[in-house]
Image 1 (tube, helix red, strand yellow):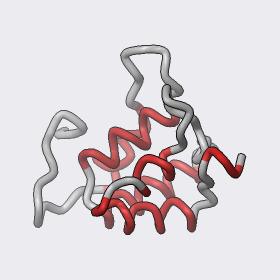
Image 2 (cartoon, helix red, strand yellow):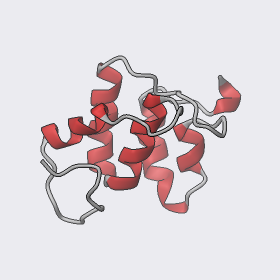
Image 3 (cartoon, helix red, strand yellow):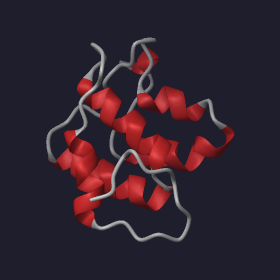
Length: 102
């Protein structure tokens, strides 16, 4: 199964199993595993696939407001990116907040 080590590819269909495979990612350092999954999937997935990942993530009882090493949530991080606005909307719809709201 291809997974997180593969770059974003436009026009490629991702199966649910491939998307769910990101839920098993483990950080290489002491960062929060939930933040790590959200960050890695953001870097590799197009918004439609990320939307599916976020649903699987929340359904699994994971923390959508996990903090990264810099004290930011994933919502904070994607909101800083010009092309991250669609991802920010997906996160907000799943209950994500900025660190200042927690």
